Amino acid sequence: MKCSLLLAVLASVSSSVLFAADRPNVVWLVSEDNSVHYARLYGHELGKMPSVEAMAADGVVFEHAFSNAPVCSVARTTLQTGTYGPRIGAHYHRKLKPVALPDGAKLFPAHLREAGYYTTNNSKTDFNVVADGVWDESSKKATWRKRPRKDQPFFHMQSFGVSHESSLHFPPKTMATTKTETDLAAVKIAPVHPDTPTFRYTYARYFDRMKAVDAQIGQVVRQLEEDGLLEETIVFYFGDHGGVLPGSKGYTHETGLHVPLVVRIPEKWRKLVPYESGSRAEGFVSFVDFGPTVLNLAGVKPPASMDGRAFLGEGITKADVESRDETFGHADRFDEKSDFVRTLRKGKFKYVRNYEPFYPDGLQNNYRYRMLAYQEWRELFRAGKLDETQRTFFEPKPVEALYDVEADPYETRNLAGNPEHTADLHRLRQRLGAIERALPDLSFYPESVIVDEAAPNAAEFGRKHAEEIDRLADVADLALLPFDQAKRPLETAIVSESKWARYWALTVCASFGEEAKSLAIRAVELLQDDEPLVRVRAAEFLAILGEGDPKPTVLDALSSTKSGTEAGLILNAVVFLRDGGPGIDFAPSELKPGARNDVVNRRLEYFGRPPRKR
Image (cartoon, rainbow, N blue to C red; front, side, top):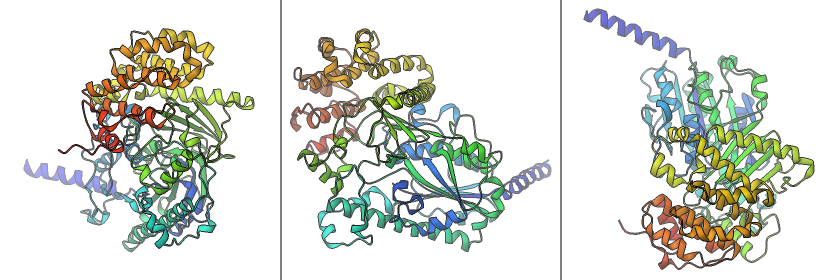
């Protein structure tokens, strides 16, 4: 009996080894905070990356590759899960509470391990979901070289932080004492930025970082070659999202979402790729597709729990990839700054839906404003020294926008009001709305609901509340109508039995601003609402109108809350009320949150309150 059992085990192991030996190795080389706008491969001469360019000569350059979110933890979670963050509750940076993957789903490297792969990560994770059983090793020393059998295929992910946002957090002295390798005079400043010595130096330093990260990438490729594995391995290079010059990382502009992607294909595995060496793919791919793609390359069927579609591997044709022409983007809370933005890029057009347009992009985020260029940009805005395009970052946003990003790559000319593009506007608006409702998009509830009520299984919560989310989206979309058409349904929603319908009715009123002044009397009544966030949103709307003092309502909600997540949202409103249009002064001593977390501490730090000792 024991002998028979042993033979069965050996046969099983032998079978898995034979299966694994016929699979390609896959390596991901990921630079932090890089968009296509700073790479020579994409037409920007100062962005020299010879190692990556050499990979492109033996592979495919993807012209339209996108992160679905413009920040690390959300983007990396999407890469690993193959699911949209707003569907599973993993769309906030950084997580206040990790969420569970729906229906027993796994991060894609766990499926590779089950198929016989050795999986390693060196070394950044930053996932917003529970991640168990994913890696054979995840550390700064993780490498394919440690796999127990040399014939075992591997998946290796390696991140390079030399280009990270923090590399641009230098003091003024650095500009005077440290020269950049990139010629300052050769730098071309984007139209959204002022052309100042600070911005020129920051640009040049970033181009220097591109060269440095390329050298590190080249070193890993050489290691594969030294090990005799380069021609056995499919190598991906991409940026983990856009960035990191002001207004890119953390924002759903193309500079925050449109990433470089190069896939080197050895001759042995050319059959798995429907492109010739040295070619460029025009079809749209996004991070939600990357996990399914690696599984397909490995001969593992992507699970139904994933939202993405493979773009390489068995069964994938060039015609299929080239027919793909859209990508979905999203932005919510990044560190302590909260907003709600959704985008749809379809072909050359980019549609943007700002659900809280009264919050300017430039609303304080402590980490962003460590950068001298950010500080200077805001100072110039406050001094009235920016042109119309440059100051947009610090002003209220439109409810919706439409851009031709081929003609206008920095999204400076909103075509939403152009009669020639009415059909394009309606088409993309409807398509984005359909995507959100199909998820369903959990951001139609405030984050406090997701953290305090929905987690850990936020996806299941979304499924159970899909009909309510659909109704809340209907209320939110009243902002897209002329006010005379929106007024009556707003009057109904603002007295709804649903607190979140009331919340969205007030949000729409705040979006209309002065146009909605006739509804101010209803907002005054809601200053006594049972739901704290409804009271705060009513106070924000009235402050935008210049009606009354919002401070008593906001400060009472802040001091009485028992939720740190809710306190963070209230403090986001406080920053808007002080720094935004209303200009309401809040003394640091007045801010007494009833609950705290990291988000709250960051906001209090901005107001001059040191973090509470633990």
